[in-house]
Length: 139
Image 1 (cartoon, one colour):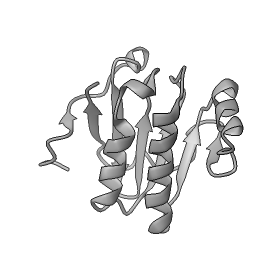
Image 2: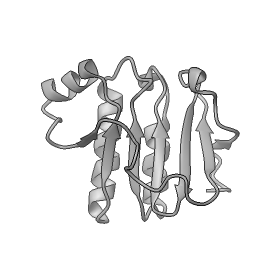
Image 3: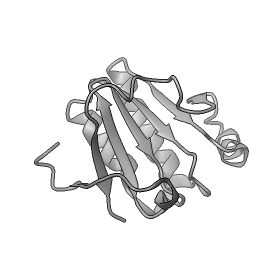
Image 4: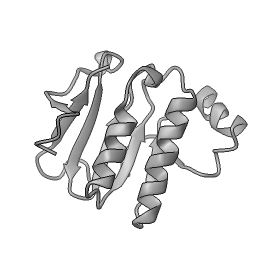
């Protein structure tokens, strides 16, 4: 990941600034945690995660929707791509902290049965083990 020109490494954003950028945390070798920004359609974080999985992502992915206000076709397509890549190598994609209105979008698109949902990210994966590597993409 260090030589990848599509990513700019920088420190994590404060929780209140989650809409200003996006964080990808690799807290352990077996999980990637993605904090989506408020308007996920304006960012390419899911493309970056798909690339990480494709380039040797022997891991699970947790996508945190706690800051997301709007989800559209590009986000859904990105999630489907990440899911397809992970399923192909025996790993899983979990969506957490999904607001009821956003979950309704998944239901209308009939995607609610395709994804695993969790109320929050507590206890999902050992995120806090080892030094975290954080990557943020710019809009």
